[in-house]
Amino acid sequence: MTMNTQIKKTNESEELIKWGGWLNEFLWICSGANRTILRQCPTDYAKYAGIGGTILFTALMATLSGGYALYFIFHSVEKAISFGIFWGMLIFNLDRFIVNTMYSDGKVTISWKEFYSGLPRIIIAIFLGIVISTPLEMKIFEDRINSQLVKDNIERTNASMAEIDKGNELLIKRRDLLEQQKAEIQGRLTKANEELKNEGVGAALSGKAGHGPIYGDKEQYKNTIEREFLIWESSYQKELEHIIKQIGINRAKGNEDISKGNDENGFCVRYEAFSNIKNENSNLKIVSIIVMLLFIIIETAPTFFKMMIASGPYDDYLRAEMHRARIASDKRISDINDEVNTEIQISTQKNKERLTAEVLANRELMTRVAKVQAELLQTAIDKWREEELLKIKENPSLYIKTNTVKT
Image (spheres, rainbow, N blue to C red):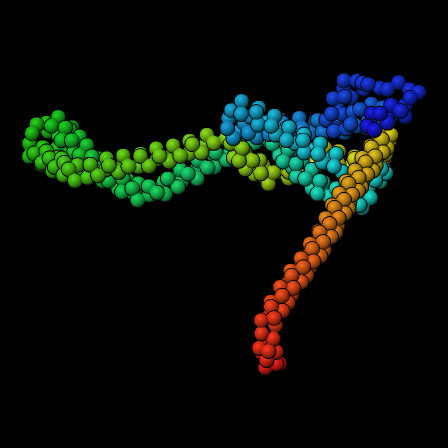
């Protein structure tokens, strides 16, 4: 007899309820309840609709959380949506499983037995609450995270530039020295040219224009500086250009690495920035903890709710169905045992009858063998008697003498 038949017989005077409303039906599916039974228990409609609603909205939050987290990993809307849906369905199935496998004693209080039996599921629910809440917390504080990322990028850029300059320290010192030498020679050459020009036009201290002895001395001094500059260029100009080029290459490579680091906007980078925000601002840390606790409460609510709800008609029907199924199972096991025992008895009886038949057959065979052996022995005795009589007839004296000697 099925449960539907039992319900129908129980409610013979009432019309069987076949539909509980599309919203209730949908939420009952989410809760994992047996809708056929639940429809006949109107007082339990809201109870299981509430459980289903909690499971549903937890799954929706998990979908948003998973999609948001994956978007910052692959930067793909399609992948984020696909993973978000998958993650939401996974959480939905886990919550549904947790709620429907919970032990409940049917009382509004939570007993120690209920708590201990539900502890593994509670731990799983807490873990899921933390996993779901983290990406959503990051979305809530997205503006602060973006600001922190800018701050972290600036600090990272400054640190990287300092590291680059430290790596170029010897090159920079050599460059500065060579540039200082070059600038010093160029400065003296410029001054010598200016003095020579002034001497030629009469603007120097001598006050005489033209190319006199003083002009010649200054021209010779200028030429000396020019030769010094040419010697310096031939000796150090290529080295200076190479050093400047190498410093530029090192800085370009460093800037490229800095640019790549600043362009990183993945989930791990954002989570690190989020952690820095919480460490620097205790108020935000408290808010983050409150948000996380909120999601943990939402995630564990169906579990504790299942522990605390009192038994209703639906639970009574389920217990009756479980009892009926258990009895049917026990009866089936008993029937199978009886069938096996009967088969064993039949087999034992057949073996016994076969053994008896074999014993009788063997006994009959032995009797026939003994009878045949007796007949053969009698025939042999008769034959021997005839032979002995023949010997006596032929020579009685010899027969007597022979048998006497043997004796």
